[in-house]
Image (cartoon, rainbow, N blue to C red; front, top):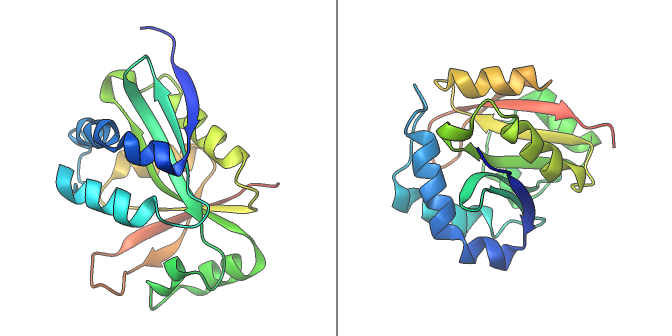
Length: 180
């Protein structure tokens, strides 16, 4: 296995690379037992129309030279539109969002052939290093036990559950204080 290079992408670059990122999503999620998986077009729509458009969007891409992983997210401070999309925020999460600047990790993808090489943990470290926030939050599918195990091993803890106002399925909210 070759050397993996990490680079940040601007919002514009992320939109330009969206097809490669969608291919990575499809490859990474093909082996996600128990996870609700979006089809490629649904993923692209969510990625371009929702995630990339959020204030403070950031993305780190790992390549060898083809994409083998990426992590992306955005700022979601108290009162942001992102929080408004959840009608019933648990007390612990509400308090975290009030007391701290928060960064939402919207996606972490690693190609199956590259797993167990610490690419996911490095992507998260790189992504969160410049976030300027005190708390990171991610939403995990309750059925995706490998993702839950990974985040737990990286020091994240379950902080409640969020159900979108759109009526979508609930997700587990996992948080980690960053100590910035």
